[in-house]
Image (cartoon, rainbow, N blue to C red; front, side):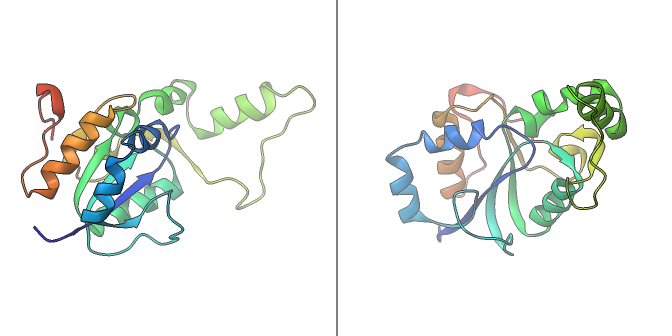
Length: 180
């Protein structure tokens, strides 16, 4: 198979999935010899490119910037992997859903939780506009494969990448079922 164009994206999450990706250690050097890394928090690339073969997307969709990004990623990517529990289910990021919509959350954090005369930031562009509910990726775009875990282990990440590289459908290590 030709060299894959490979990307990773980080939306609303803790970056634990990317840290687990980095725990692939020396294998990342081998991977870099076999794929073209075209976009990632680890690269100084500002715009998600077109014609990406595979992307691992970490994190849930929590604001309008995430919403715009995931739509761009889906349009420009052949195989989208929902990478980690926040991307798969919303997980910890979605805990704020129980507090109500975005306005209620901002009020609770910036006013009710303030030590001294709190106020909700209102300057346009200061904060990304929050969605009323945090969403897993599949609630917004088609997901081709789910790689659960908080975070997924490096072995599971490697197994998925290796199978995609060889042209087969991704299967996680350890006999777990394919969700998507």
